[in-house]
Length: 456
Ligand code: 5AD
Ligand code: SF4
Image 1 (tube, protein in one colour):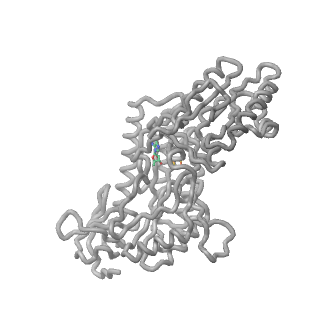
Image 2 (cartoon, helix red, strand yellow):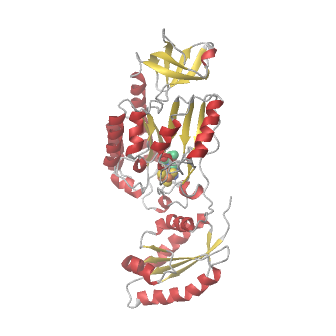
Image 3 (cartoon, helix red, strand yellow):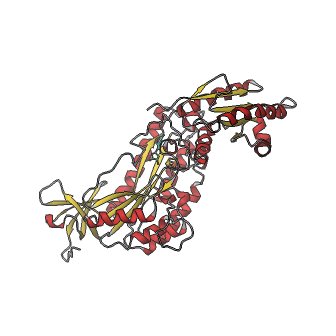
């Protein structure tokens, strides 16, 4: 769907470099619906792309801002208020000073950071409580939460959080789904109770950034601020009938101590964590705007494993992000070896026009990305097979969800989210039973009902 058209006026000062940057700014803003205009007075977004070389450059910018103020005031109470940005070298040199001296300025962008503009514009709209319509198309493959996921009988999804404020430079979610928003605890509890009363035994709490959850506490609670995911999990754990709780997808920076502790404290919180790292290279992580290093990620995994030693770790990876060298890719391979994943998703970087990543130089050739993806997937598959093989000889509680493909067989899930096939009577559908695991492949386990099977 095409976003509503908005007018963009850019005034460029100074050198050829700035003329080039202004062009790039027009390019990155097009998917947000901005079309170039040659009039500042009725523009929705005005950018002064400044230059510091000539004397009095800053003064010229201030007097231009004075003129713009009148236009901005005129549009202030309309449904199309004006946003004013100062970019380029003056912005770099006196960013804070500009904001102080000219409150009419909404945002300041340093030189060579035009690729940050979509993020900054989206943030400015959010601060004013407006939603930014864009032409980004969510891609189901990358949008793990795309569409409504149906209730599979005994295992259901429950959305607790939407949107994202992280702005990873490859991702459209912050633009398509908007700002982070958490549902109030009471609403979630109400829905979880309803699900449990319909026979649901397992819920997976969903959110693009689920561990950034910060919802209003329940009525009557003495909490003076929002609840985090750890608290929410403790609360949901008390609902009778819900034997299993999971959550996805998380960002490493939001893995707080209360949430990590919940993995040690709550038996119903399943020992499985999907925690994407995307790359093992700090340089690539920085370019992706992930805001953490690989060592930070490894430390978090270490803490989680200390809390819940058997936890199955899953992740997401992107290969071929712009600028990724052979060395960066090797760092990803090394990181995967270090963490040792139970399962993972891996993708070739896909250039999403309008995201900051699409404007980066040094896009990686297709054949190089394909080759890296193949190598990474081979390694991840080996780890997944090994993780599954480790279950042979163990007795695991399996939640049977439906009939299996073969007659007399049921399909269920282990605590680690592995698919389990097992010969069992149909009455066990919707129940948890102990299964002795006898065989494993990369994608599933096979087991036999334990002799002492004590269906709950
Ligand atoms: N290219 C490749 N992978 C992407 N993902 C999101 N956007 C892109 C993109 N432009 C992947 C990330 C994310 C997962 C849901 O999809 O790995 O964690
Ligand atoms: Fe996208 Fe996830 Fe990054 Fe948010 S945290 S921008 S949803 S990849």
